[in-house]
Length: 319
Ligand SMILES: [Zn+2]
Ligand SMILES: [Zn+2]
Image (cartoon, rainbow, N blue to C red):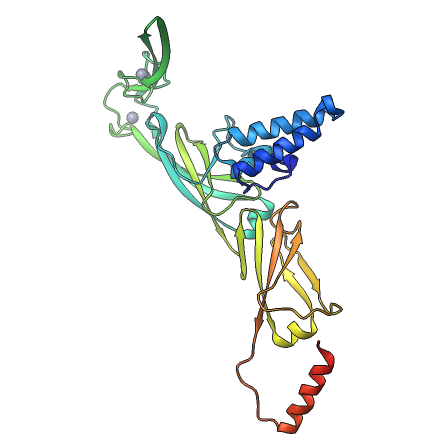
């Protein structure tokens, strides 16, 4: 259950709607008024989390306990926009192509990662920063009666932030001191990633570098997606609009959804929409089916008598 579900709002609700829903729930479930204390706590937690998260639309990812398999220290976040790298870390962008089906189920992808690796033969650990490449600097500031002390990390000047210093002429690297290393990795892509979502990870070949995995999600034919809601355009001939049919709609779950309209007497209006709950990208989202009725352009030559009969029949059938 996501924080949005707890408040009974969707993840594209406005701040105002969320606030309103929270107040209502909090009053209803207040322990002083006989409400369940656990429930009340959950509501407060949900509201706090939604409010403090600057990228609300991706809260559900953080909430589902996903962990990419190769990286331990969880340098992992979803953003729609790239932020400026802090402390000048190198960032490499890798585009990850995936289908809507893969986004629905989550998947594993192979990516090739490269990095410059320092030559082991001619390098030794910098004794100024102990190989970390960064040193702590304490800044003390006096503002009125207050003294603030701030510690920041700055690149080590002795080794230029490399963590290593180089000894002598090296025939291994020809004094280039670095090698380009390339390796294939399997990464786990969580469920529900959307087009242009970003997953930020540490470079497994060099923990000082960041890799930005940019998701490129390809839609299934006739599908569109907004957040986790899906929109399917169902093209049907005019006679199906009048008499119904049993349609089988492909779904990113890999299954076909059956939509049986044969016993429904309402005529389907062009561009009318049917909503199926729980059949979007997850159980909490919806599938919107748009009936795209194709009106024929020409008719064959038929006698006027026949046309008159058909018109009468038509009048008897439809009201
Ligand atoms: Zn150093
Ligand atoms: Zn070397």
